[in-house]
Each structure stands twice: as C-alpha cells, then as structure tokens.
Length: 231
Image: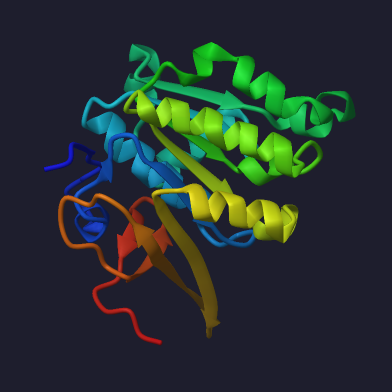
C-alpha cells in the first residue's frame, strides 16, 4: 500500500473521503475562484497533518502571520504549539506580492529558497497570485519540474490556483502534471453558501475517494463535511 500523509481529525470525515490522506510524493492542485474555500481546505489539511506529526511549510499570499493564527483559532484549529515546536512554518508573502520589483523573478527566488522546502509537506496558497507576473510557459515548466523533484524525495506539494489569474495554457499545465486535482464549486442557496469539493483526479489513493464532497465552514467548528451533497 502507498504510504500517505493522513490529515485525519475526529471532528470530520474529510480525510476518509479523500482516500485516507495524500500519497507521499504527490503534487496536489486545488482550484477555485476567489472566496471559494481554497484557503480553508488548506488550513484544515495543514492542521490535520501537523496533529499527526507531519511537518508543514505554509506559504500564503492571503494572510499575515497574525491573521493566519487568528483565522486558525477562529476555526478551532489551535496551531500555536505546532508553530513553537517548528512543526509548522508559516510564511506570509503579502509584501512580495505587492512589490512590483520582486514579481518578475519570483519563480527563480521561490526555487532558490531551500529552507522553504525542508518540511514534509509544502502548501502554497495561492501559487497563481505569486507567479501571474512572471509565469510564461518555460518558467512554469521549470517550476513544475522543480516541484516534481521534491515529489521524488517523498514530499507532498499542495498548490491552490485561481484560474482567472493564469492563462488557460499555464493553468492546464498544472492540471495535467499533478497527481491529485480538485476543484471547488460554491453556490448561494438563500442565506447559505453551498460548497462542494470535486475530485477530478486522485492517483495512488489508499482507500476509496469521494467524487463530490459537500462542506460548510463554521466559526469555532471549522470545516464540516456535509452528509449528503445535493445538486
């Protein structure tokens, strides 16, 4: 059986629905529009992994360190002990995204920052925001082959993509080269937002993988997997 990084926690069935975890050496792409739930899915997976003693680097274009810690605690994912023990390394890159000078050579800088890739799992949320100014086909191929090298060392790389930030050709390169490809759909139903995680591709799963996983996000509860996904 493939060895996986489990992100199981007692409160929800997300890990079970996703085959019992991500196989080691996987490139995972999670795609969705703004506000679709990409960051929350990554936060939930990260919390499950660090609780299982898997080390994670989380690179974020979305939140400052303080904002991330507050967000995790608001979802009842207490991460302070993991940050203190060094099991979780959080890197906010908001200043980089905003500074014009660093945008152009960002891919080279990312690949050169060895300390970012020492943990078992590396999450980049969102990769499309980081590379939209510097990504051409050649550089994107370089980046993907760099990630594949890390996969060859058993590391799991989780990337979130907002398709509107990248050209279709570059987005499809990421889709076709990944081992796990999921998209997020959200639909407003009255006052509620109905969210669905659609699993398009999942290579090397240890167990059965659900195709469509309905979920909601609740303060103080975190991610809640819906029992039945309708429509």
